Length: 117
Image 1: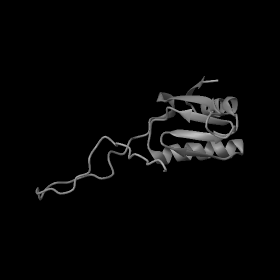
Image 2 (image 1 turned 120 degrees about the horizontal axis):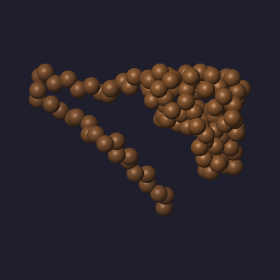
Image 3 (image 1 turned 30 degrees about the horizontal axis):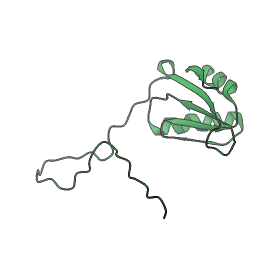
């Protein structure tokens, strides 16, 4: 028999019905403002585990909305000439490019640190 996937608990429940005529439910949640680069501390790590032996560089610690995260990921991918993705608060860059990523982010004004092995 196959394994069943459990639903993740998102920490909040969905409202099904309200009798209050003035009730205003914000479905999108609060849009997080992006901090300026000088106020952000980004961590760049290398990871190989669970990726079929392929190495990737991961940037974590970004504080801001998803659109700005995707823009930063796009800039990194373009300047390095590689693929990757930007979602769920982290940027994944294909290949081992930690030193180059730290250099690019530092030039853009971000505080960066290498982490991991």
